Structure formats: C-alpha cells, structure tokens
Image 1 (cartoon, rainbow, N blue to C red):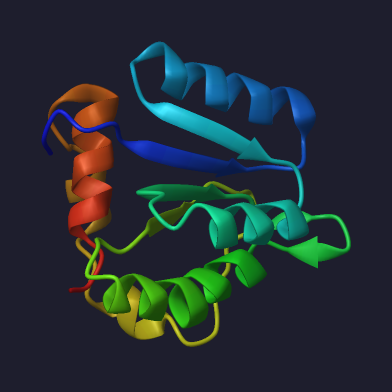
Image 2 (cartoon, rainbow, N blue to C red):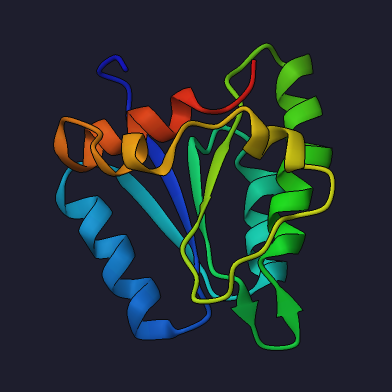
Length: 136
C-alpha cells in the first residue's frame, strides 16, 4: 500500500459501535465513514467507488448485510473493473454468519482463518491483508 489514504466504510446499525469503529480507524490514520443501514451503505458505495474495505454487520433490523456484500460483488466490482481501479474488499463482523449469494467462489479463494488472524503490521497490515484477498 502506498502513501495514499486507505478508505473504509463501517456498516453497522448499532450507533455507538458504528461510531467507535469509525473512530478506531480514523485514530490510526485510515479514512473511515459509517453507514447505519443497508440503504445508507449502498448509497455511499454508489457515490464513493474508491472504498478499499467495507465492514459488514449481518443483522441490521429488517434488512441484512448480505445485501451490501451482493451489491459490492454484482454492481460495484464490475464498475471498478471498467474504471481500472482496485476492487472493494469486505469483511463480515457479525454475530450472525452469512454467505452472500454469488460470492461463495470469493470465499473459496480466501485464506485460512489463522492467516487472517496472524496478519502482521497491526490494523493497517490487517487491512492490506484483507485487500489482498479480493480476486483480481
């Protein structure tokens, strides 16, 4: 990763957790924004196609974080490919595990859980590692 700013979108409907995650990222020099709903997240991604990583909550009331992941894979990735820019990575941070439809092949190309947990370089190293998992 170069000196350019790494951009993260936190998708979490629990307000104080969203705010604290955004503050954590910003505190280590990572540009972060928060979205409190699926609609807010999709609107943000439609306006900011250069987001590097999205953290996703699964259970967001009437809607599900899966919708955001599916939007990233099915809408954002093709747009980013046309613009010849990097693809947005996403990670699920949720008590409810889920596999977004159409992205099982993305998970199949991932790495073992212990490799993710042992990424060197603190939070920035972890972010670089998450970004490296996104298929070309």
